[in-house]
Image: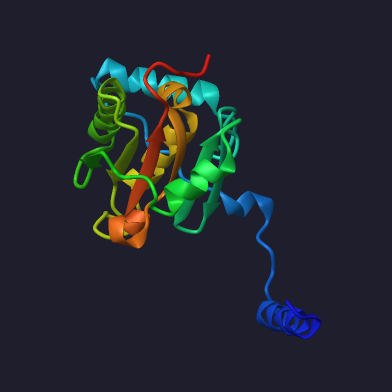
Length: 194
């Protein structure tokens, strides 16, 4: 790239950013925590949530001990600590074939969480590696805010099963559902984190 082109790019960027203010660190990755399960909810869901809380710090996404997670508005990407960033880029680029899909539309939080856990366990047992979890954008939720998306993201970033089974995850490409779905790349069945 020539010096002139570089200067033009720098000038264009500076012009575009004029007046922009950086987000405070507290505002970048806030995802509301889902409410506690209703009384009598399945013990498995309660156990998964307990494990999630134990692994996460005050911020369930950026505070994950098992994953490096970044959120960008309505999108997310995360990879297990020690996993090469190239693998995450391949997942985001759609280079990996989706082998199984789970559609959580219309499910209550507790049922969706239990279904997600069963789906990941089952896919791993069947040696499926690349999964698509469809959670929706929240357009039809009571408050027009996503309910299942933050639940799925939190589970991926902080659950004990995800820490053992998941290598990377990212918001899906537009053709796969965009920010209404999340791609998940599983570890090979014989390999799990200690």
